[in-house]
Length: 450
Ligand SMILES: Cc1cc2nc3c(=O)[nH]c(=O)nc-3n(C[C@H](O)[C@H](O)[C@H](O)COP(=O)(O)O)c2cc1C
Image 1: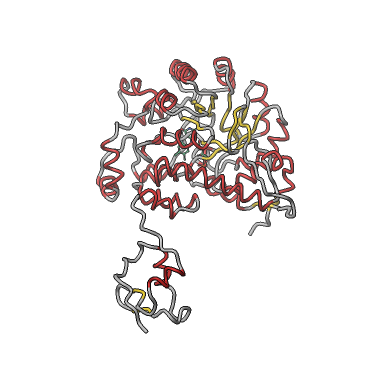
Image 2: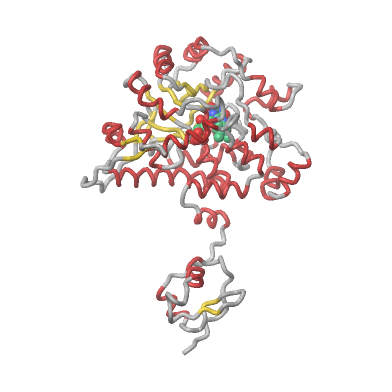
């Protein structure tokens, strides 16, 4: 007996009916499929009978929600962001320095390690809360500083800060931010850290520091792996500039991403908002001004100078060796961030994760140790904590969220990493960050290569 089933829905609107359409009639002999351009569930069964077998989901009118529903992992957010970004923006975010050897090795280092679970333990309650640099955090990670953030989404740094504040994790504003540090602190708040470069113009540095202090930034992160900017080959190939400059190929690239262009055009001009007047007075363009400010003469004395100026918690980011971590302890920093800048500065530099056990041995509990570069999953965070990190930093993962879906995308990236970490710890038989760190390297094994 055949029953009418009504108008077919367009394919792709509803996963449940799509699944039914894709099921072969061998597997479901009582459902006959008509093969035409628009395959439809034929009238072999009443729709009410189908409805009792599967739950039909209403089409989602909210575009962002539709995007986020499809995103289960950071990689999904990455692909969603790629669809929205022009090639030059994608290249800027994804790119590493020179041959991108460090970029690839950062990921490979995590993937070369295996977790050693201890089942048969009560893991009903898993607590991810921890203290980072004397502040409470709901999760053992912070959002790393990233420059030019309004290129990835017009809501930029404010969107990232709001998502971090609502999730209860620290957010680091970059010196190279495209939103004024006062605006983010005044309008958003949360556990805010400020990342500083020691620039040639030390007056500018002192001024930035005082503004960060006055606006309520709790901690300062001094980045020291940038005496000059690394060569990002993709940026050169793609003609990436701030603000974007028009050439035949960039026009074509942008034409393919009209939404991104429209948002850029209606928003305030993209600039280094923290020192816009200085840039305005400078005869060169924005990028030349910034490039010239990186100072190759910065030394340990400058770190000591900064220590004298900043009374709050101080981190130094971009060290990788145990020897340098010990020296940083002597200068009086509160934490080191082992980092190779996400593979964007010195290429073929060691992977920070590989240096972590030695650094931890060297500094003991005198200071906190964080690690970044290459973290993409909750299990990566578990590995880093087990190998001695107090917490980790993530960079690109939240930028993918931002590019895919603005503030809600950043929030999604944070909760994905948190959920993955919770699941990994549950499956490992570990119920707290403290336990993960205490059981330490017994939980991690390197895998034979090849
Ligand atoms: C697009 C982008 C911009 C960045 N800008 C800065 C910056 O302004 N200051 C800084 O200290 N680090 C900067 N970093 C490095 C990050 O703080 C962090 O060390 C790195 O992203 C970690 O690696 P991951 O992206 O693999 O998580 C940037 C990274 C990216 C991807």
